[in-house]
Length: 179
Image 1 (tube, helix red, strand yellow):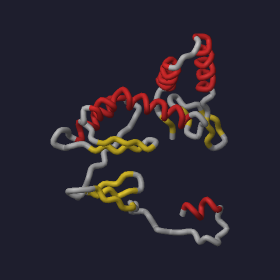
Image 2 (spheres, helix red, strand yellow):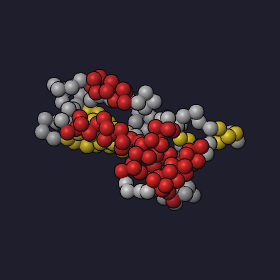
Image 3 (cartoon, helix red, strand yellow):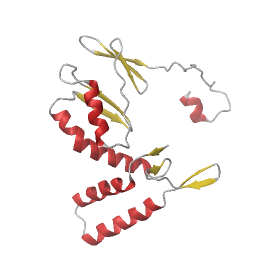
């Protein structure tokens, strides 16, 4: 899996962020050259073979998370901030690449908002999850809407087995604590 955005779009976002700061022209050129070299060394391995993605940053690359975050923050400031300020979107939150949006269905339709998001960048994929019986899930939460408040519960996928690892097992400590 890769962060499927054209590398040069990411480079432009990073460079525009750098330009906002006070740097000398020569320093900016040097940073751009270093970023270009790093992005050209964008390889990953699978089954003992090396590959270079046609677009995007290989998942697992030390830079992929940082570049994805910079890019998504820039998209939010350009395309989403206005919707929040005008209250077309009542609530917006993102955790890495999972987004939750709350909006008034009297003012907006879910499909309209989804289409607006899809127009931002054709390489980004958005999937609409709507509320069913006043309940929706986000990450590992069940979000239940009542007339006067929001209740939260733990969301369990249908494939969940509720299996736990005994504390005295020989599994690594991190696995035992996570299960």
